[in-house]
Image (cartoon, rainbow, N blue to C red; front, side, top):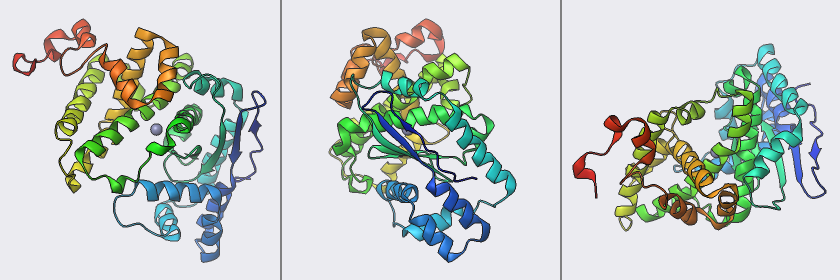
Length: 332
Ligand SMILES: [Zn+2]
């Protein structure tokens, strides 16, 4: 059955608590069968549906839909079929069958020593994979998960890395709509770069070990020239925000988020992971783990003490000197 309870409570030691909640996927499948009012009501009462909606309210810059309207709109484009149900069930069963200690250890590797999870993983249909507070939601209707079931585990690691990170920084998640200046926008971009960078690096080892590199971010990270291009682009965007920190934010400035997270550029994922990799290879894993607790300012300082992509770029000089060395006039 599609929404059968995934009765997993992971207890790696007596302290770690990561539980799964599948109630929203069963309720969503039922709603999709006839899209009736009472099934919608049941769907929006599920805790996974509420978590996804709270995340939407946090990240939404414009007028916000009520929860019923939000889910109705989200699910309007999904036709119900047997194949759809089979795809969802296959991912859920794969998640259930995987060795849990394997993926939990990958997440704990990049969190401060003695990190303790107290997290619920909500399995949902048709919303992004998200973190909200210390809980996460995984979208089992992801085409990427259907193409390679291992992607669900890799993204579980990614989202749990966020849940872990937020234990130390929950006060840093302001409403995006409350941003008033470019300086405030810059601060949140740096915060989310650290958060996403740690998310991306956390599944890298397991992906590499298993050859699970379907995700485009990892293709870019393995292509030194393309990675360098994205990192430079990221720091150009960041410099503009930093150099005009006092300026009032305009609606068009929020396009920064599209550059940072949009499919075509993925700037904070690529750059955040590159920064984390640079810190790990220069100062060691423990330093990188400690920075999760210290926060993004220290993360940026540590990275900048090794390389500053707007001034020098050791990475590129090794590889593609003629193409990517900065023009003379840009050097300071
Ligand atoms: Zn993420």
